[in-house]
Length: 451
Image (cartoon, rainbow, N blue to C red):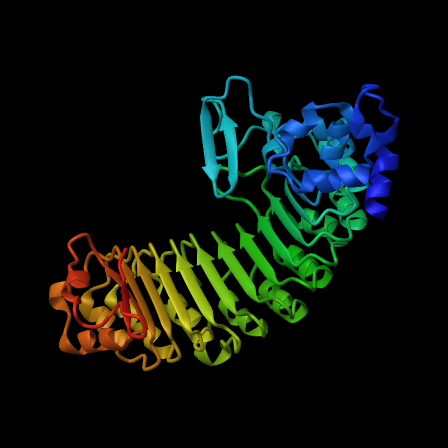
């Protein structure tokens, strides 16, 4: 009731006399909003009826994905939609050139480029000006104090001038100070200065930071141990954290583990962490899920095994599109995650039999997923899975070196006691047909899942 009243006063909804014969004027704004809430999920046609309905429809909008920065910078977005809670400014943060003919996509970020653009860097002329960024973020913070989720690209130009850095921090700092309900933040192309600017975000629980990445580098400064330490001390309520293009080391990861005691999920993507960072994972006492994505190397020198420690609460380890040929680093990772219960390997390079055999040390594994691991053989798989006495679920997809004809009686016996089996190592696999009549798939018994 109070929010509706505030919206009516701010928008002067009752001052619009669109028509003397408009019987809807007899209905209060509160009743109309209740009616609109019960209609279809697409309320856009309502805004075409009259100006009053247009403004009322704006009160119902809680999320927006902006493509034109001027709509925010001129104040239209916050006045049109004063109750936004989820805002995605990424598409508008990188204006597209008029004659763009190339679309460059990385994860959730898509950029339009000219054919004469540089290979590794987006031209400065195409980036959003820092002053424009600050004005837009200030208006957003003032107009949407109830903001809960924000996605933004840090478009700062590279400079070592302290004055410019402070000016740049103003926009992000304003959001951090005024939007006290902000719980989820996604910040692209961020640096240590960006993390200092958002240090006032005390209630953020989900944070995704994208530093310097191939093809999307705006500046030469990335996320170092300094930024990670600032982040750890200011955002101590983090539950999920994703670091992409991070260039820290043991100290930065250790600071996060010591300060962010509620951290349950950590994702490291395309990291450039220095050697020895694996041992810092032992400080993450409540970490349940660790995910590595697109990492060229895990840890070149993890240090002595006796100094690695362990993650006592770890449950799931996911390694996706990573190079695991570094046997020493891979072994250290499995040592730290020794109590893991779910293992997932997806499109990993170098996952040969001897590398996969290191997973024998993870004795509590209950669920295994292998996808796109073409170097792993049937014998290598069997040698490991037979040692896992608690194994309940097995998924093997697109692993061309694993063949039905090489399944041994011991492995077949294991299949018969699994709670869930998804077996499709290649397109020639006929195991599903051969299991007809074994009782799998019947209610109350074991079952087999095909692709």
